[in-house]
Amino acid sequence: MAGLTAANKLYKSGVKKGAFELCVIEGGNRIGGRINTSEFGGDRIEMGATWIHGIGGSPIYEIAQEIESLESDQPWECMDDFLDHHDPITIAENGYVLSPYIVNPVSNLFNSLVDFAQGKKKSIVGGIESDICVNGNESVGSFLKKGLESYWKLESRKNGIENGYGYGYGYGYGNGTWDKKSLEESIFAMHENTQRTYTAANDLHKLDYLSESEYVMFPGEEITIAKGYSSIIESLASALPSGVIQLGKKVNYIEWQDECVMMENKHGNGSRPVQIHFLDGTSISADHVIVTVSLGVLKAGILKKGNDSGMFGFSPPLPNYKIEAISRLGYGVVNKLFLELSPDFDLDRFPFLQMVFHKSDDHSKNPKIPWWIRKTAYLAPIYEKSRVSLCWFAGEEALKLESLPDEVILDEFSTTISSFLSQKDYNRNLKFEKVLKSGWGSDPLFMGSYSYIAVGSSSDDIDTLAEPLPNTTVMESTKSGSPLQILFAGEATHRTHYSTTHGAYFSGLREANRLLEHYHCIDV
Image 1 (cartoon, rainbow, N blue to C red):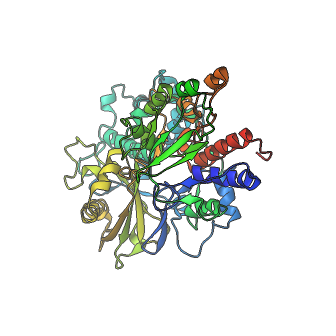
Image 2 (spheres, one colour):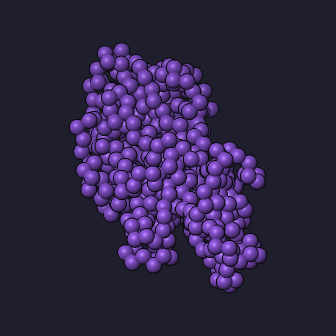
Image 3 (cartoon, one colour):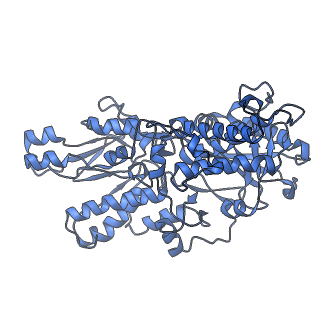
């Protein structure tokens, strides 16, 4: 998204005016990066980016409207409509259907805590914000834990029970396998697992609390794209002439002229300062390169030794201040698992299922449910009465999913879902026939899904990552060198919209405009 947005803008505003030549280099065999529309079970699905996160002011929504991608004759992953109009059925491990009277207060508490952390609300359900002390280096996970503990204290006081251990005494669920407190804790954990997929953090205790309020959401509904997210990519690429985009060109390293080299030779020979070296042994020269690889690839690249092949890097290495910013920022893995139900299953009987699991160390847990499933939160059809259902995984569980053969996933997931649906007779003839999973963590071109601000980092690190090289201050003082040799774009370089496709879009425009201003093109 970032690279093609930049190329689209540069071509229309600069190349057509003869200001410069343009080449787009893609390491894979397709365009789109972490956007990849596919098909499964006759439905159009998204292997990567899925949502337009708020339609108010979103450039992605504007493009989708312009190219008429919001409606389609082919069924698509239309979960926005399904989730908006269907209440989930929440079932605790071993098949106990939970009343909304148990689930809703905990769900409301969790949503209220997240809204408070993100600055959307000034108070939390029950007014418990006065009980929560937030430290300077707080994580979202520790804040949420404090919020749940404060909620329990409030409920204990309401019930005349001052000792927190007494909260929930006398409540029994599932033949004694649950008490009220442990049940509420597991419902809360279910929502935490959903939040992990939103943020890509393996553990919410690694997600910085103070940065949450700086993240910006567009107003309006969140929707999926009927004709697929790839239609946006194809529209951006369609403006470029044949031959501009080169596929299958994996970069080994980018050679550039840092400040020390510039002061030595003043770069006075007129040659282009940047050399892009490919794994196949070829290279090209350029005056500028906009680097739009993922933060995961950059993280791996800063560990690269010399010009060893097989890992993207820079020669000379990036400056220490940029390496430190890359190291501090968070980057995680989120994967999607699609499952197709057998044709003889009654689709009217398959719910939008929220799953509440026992904690991993609880003796009451079902031994047949594998650990990698225990941190998913829900399974739901991708639209009403679709035979294709979807669930999301983050972190270690997402990586485990990538490593498992399809037959193991089918067997273990069918066993798990059947155990949840057994008490309501939902599982008659329940059988998943096919699976399709994404694999962003093990793909060397991405090495994960999207970025987040980790504890110990801040939004300033994003700005540092976005700064072009070489350092313009040094260049001005020495009056030498070629400016804007390496520019950086991509979702991880946008301070307020990181982790999103529209953040990547804005970053691509930002760097294109930087170059257009450099060449005095007028319609920036």
